[in-house]
Image 1: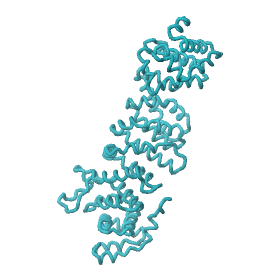
Image 2 (image 1 turned 90 degrees about the vertical axis):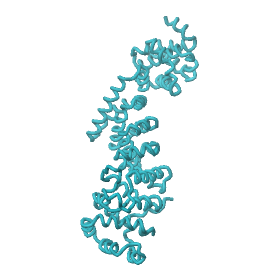
Image 3 (image 1 turned 180 degrees about the horizontal axis):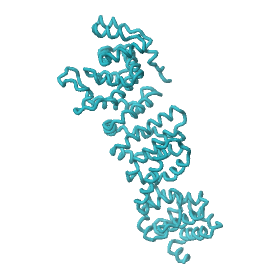
Image 4 (image 1 turned 60 degrees about the vertical axis):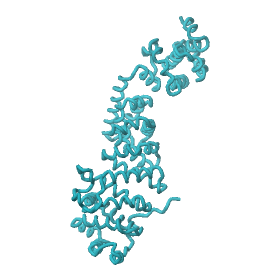
Length: 449
């Protein structure tokens, strides 16, 4: 059973005894004065105060998070910050005008707080880190003197702390239903920063995204899928991430989702991702194997309203065509088989092709042979059936264990059925295949002659 979900609005109904905190010297008289002017005031009054002294309020809220450990108060201050940023996201710039380190308290509560506290800290840190001033020395402060007594967090310190927490939520969620959507949402914003992509890959975080790419049905799961794919798209601009993605199951998952999704934004981000991955040789070959050219044709036939999606589909289609031109002869043959588009191209009857590539048929547990056998069962195209029978006979002729392997794949019965096919080309090649299967390659060739 999921824990009760606390909202910002509920938290802000509390009354916090600020005077008690001043009497115990946890806040100063100046702090109390600022709080009295701000707390429980109208939105317009708060906006006016933030316009006049925003950095002071940010520093005040951060100091409370640093010095006070009472859970209800920590939640309240985080709710105030959340309210402030939701009313005007541009106020995140106030954090970068603070005179002291404002990041450490958020990192602390990210690790130590309850779910509401963790969620607030993560959202706030994501905004602050995403819209940070770019400093030459790697600090995410705004140039305060380096001799300042306050601890200065570097971008890498803050980033590492937050990425560690986000990764932990993907592995072992703190909240059964909210942790993963929050983590993915924050990552989809943070990964817009190139430095974050580097750190995320170095932290081995990419593998945590791949299992989340699967067909979605309800609105919540569709949004999670979209933001996960958005993360993959952002990572596809970083070479080291692309190298890693090429070794995972991400490609089949992306293609499967694109094939079945009707959500335009999901399809768009997947197509853009595949377009970025295509130049990687291993990725391009895999796209061909997965039948992506055919899927693109199907996607292009749908009534999409997004011109960017249509442009990306055309670019991906053109890129795949160019990729095919650079494939080896066996790669081209494999593509032809996997797409089911068999025809009498020269390679089929070229003895050199079979001698040079016969061992390639052993890849992926004889994948190409298995597809040829499936074509015998499923195709209604006479040319495809004739070519499939012929290619099986060629495999028997050129592979030392060809007869055994084809027999093990249960091809015999399928081929024998085709010996009664109405098309003479099909019956002729089915007969050749059966002869080689039963009599051996040399004797079958003699009979054929």
